[in-house]
Length: 243
Figure 1 (tube, rainbow, N blue to C red):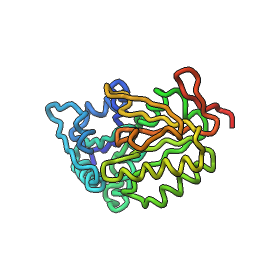
Figure 2: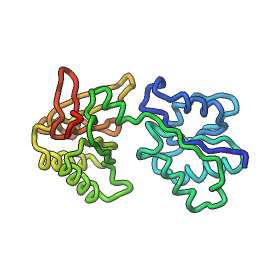
Figure 3: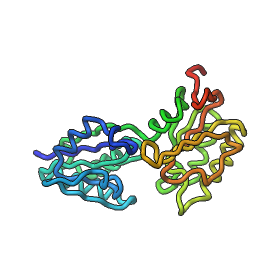
Figure 4: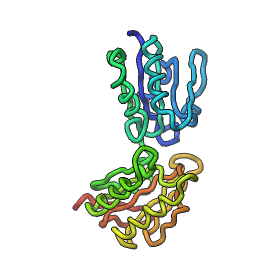
């Protein structure tokens, strides 16, 4: 097999945060596969085919990319942030499980800067100690499991980064998440809303849980909840590295 498949992260939004490794792979690719807004971030050029698809077509997208690589094409599956964080790398390997003939392909995963890490850097250092990341969407797991994980993470004292907090189709769930966090963590815990981080529409807001409202988040927002020791210093928020 002469083709290859690269699964890459395009970072949180700013082109300056796309890694040189990813930029080099983009220059060599013959095909770009991904969710519509992520493919739109790749500049067209002669010899490059763009294959954009809808948000809930991950498995079809992964199979299509593998099939093209098996035909000898240089295929790149793009995600925002890092491809291994709630993104396409897992879907590619899931598709690969059912396709043993493709398992000899040259497959590489190229890391990217996540929205979570970019947001934390803008805010200061709220993830400076133990933390976890939780996807609040219930598209691929039931909401009771999401709520269960929220409670356990709060009980363990983790800082938490939340992806996909609130969409038009499920606005009530983030309201419920805030209720659970307020119950478990108390009103004074700091929470940061980082919207469209590293883009011209960026907005960073830190409040207490008592002040947080559901409409402070949407699908372009990463939400970071501090741990019990997280505090402000000047305009920044940080979590000490001590327990």
